Image (cartoon, rainbow, N blue to C red):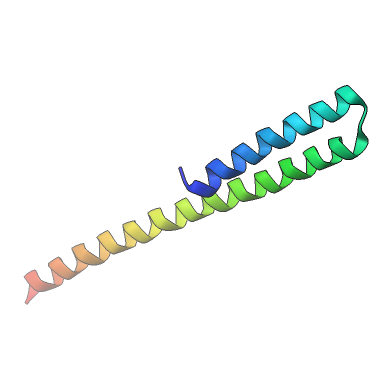
Length: 76
């Protein structure tokens, strides 16, 4: 799991807590702040997932390149 995924999930939890706290005390601004933090956290989590996918794709491409290089040497 990427660092941004974890940070995003933490931000979502904090945002949810603020939203619930705002509902309990009747504070619309606190509810809004909590919802905004949740949205930002979701975005950060998505960035982390994309980063992880890119790193996996890059590792697979490097592995394939190595295999192709070995195969090319064998053909010579």
